[in-house]
Image 1: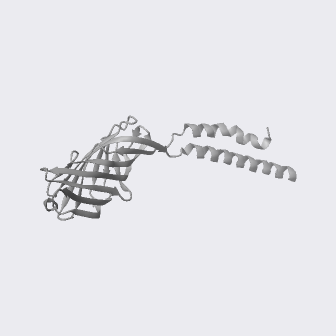
Image 2 (image 1 turned 90 degrees about the vertical axis):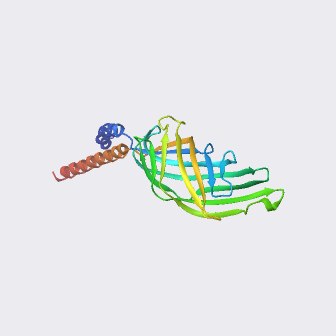
Image 3 (image 1 turned 90 degrees about the horizontal axis):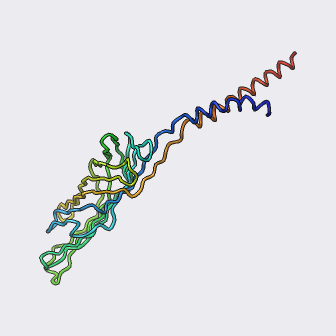
Length: 242
C-alpha cells in the first residue's frame, strides 16, 4: 500500500461508519388523487342541476405534496396542492319540454401552499387557490321558444381556505380525500357550484432528501488525507535541515 494513502484509508472506515449511521433526512410524499367519484351541484340557474344524475364527470383530479419520513409516514410541515381540476357535462331533461345541456370546467393555475397536520391527517391550504372557470349552459327543445336564455362565462377566481382531510396515507394505494369546495360565477346573476369531493389515490411517490452522513464521510477522508500530506512534507523539510 502506498504510504501516502495509508492514514486516509485507515481513517476511512470510521467516517464511512458515521455516514452509514446518519439517518436520511425527511422527504416529500406526492399523492395523485382522482375525483371522478365526486358530485357537483349548480344553483342559480332556472332549474338546479345535480351531477350525477344530471350529467357526468369527464375528468377530475389533483396532486398533493406532503412532508414525510417515508412513503407511508407523513409528518407535520409545509404542504401544497397543484393540478386541481374538473370537467363535467350537464344533461337535464325538464318536463319532457326541453333539455338543459352544457359543461363546466375548472383548472387550477399555479401552486397553492399550506400546512399538513399528521396527527389528524388534515392539509390546510390557506394560500389563495386560483382557478380558471368556464361555464356554458344551453338548451335543446322542439320549440326554441321553450328554452331559457343561454349562459356562458369565463373567469378567474381565488377560492378561500381549503380543508382537505386525507385518510389512509399509511397504506399504499388507500389514501382518500372527502371535502367540499364552493365556486361562484356572476354570469346572468350569481351561479354557485358546490363540489363534493370524493377522492381516491391513483399513485404516490416519495423523494427523500440526501442524507447528511455521506457528505461528512467524504469530507472527513479528504481532511485526514490533507493532514497526512502536511505531516509528511513537514518531516521531509526537517530531515533536509538536519
